[in-house]
Image (tube, rainbow, N blue to C red; front, side, top):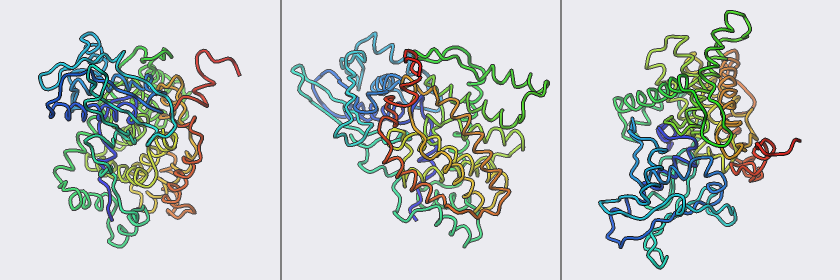
Length: 456
């Protein structure tokens, strides 16, 4: 059925945005590799960010990601340096070294921001060029950051093969295949990873272990790190304080639900790590990275889940996200935050339902319920930072995912609107949505809640 790999959706990235940080990082890495393979004269590297990348690029650390990619940063399992440190080093040197040659590049001068959204091949478009002394391009490449860290253009595939799926791909067909064969979604997905993507059981297990390790690392780091998040909002990191206050409130009886509140705090911890430019798992994006790990961490602790159960949940979450990416979009710049937080909530709800021994129809119903109630959600980050409303939105969606899973488990799995119809609806709404509500910081909270905005 052309089922995408779940690892096309679940992948390690750097915050705060998969399409505005991790994607541009990959584009810069591609340009660096291409330049290293050519015997071209020395010239100055010039980067132009267009459309949504320009409008919110500073707040999304796009310039830092570009600089890090050109400087040779690789998103390894445990990167030795941060993109903040690399940016400062390149700024001080005024150059980047590529294949033993030093190319002039000053991020303050050589990264240009063009906010025009007209006639672009994609709202997240960037161009990287090597310019001769007369400013004529010696090498020029155009890239499109299409969401979830995926990039088209340059030396990268013109079609995102990681999401290439037959037009017939649907949740309904996956459910039919499971029911016909009497197997669950995790078994079907494992078969697909092996048969379609050459990933045998040991490799799938290794990758899932790495992903879960990165998820739990981001929770733990977020729970112990204090201080201000980057950007002019001067937002204080709250996860450590929230956890401490939760423990105190339990003794006083002021908290109605310990489990859902703890899940919300875990989501805040990851979202704050993401906002600081930390290492997280895109699930399916950086801006929604806190939802799935928060839900699974809570369930792992409460139910003492073995690794296999967590792996099954991650596989189910991944296929839910992959369907949305293939049939609609997970990019806030294309469909608003319904494609990011809405999809993440659906992934987490399906994962939770799987962990709690839900049937295949119940898992599908949980995913649909979670996505349905995020339809129309705008992406309007204040100051272009993935902080307000993004951090608390992760917390709310984690709670919503647990509720959707619980409600689904109390029913038979029969419901009126299928997950596939909800995905198609999300795509239509995203097309109709005014572009100022799609990661441009030109409308909604991004305007009315600016620090210098007049009172309503």
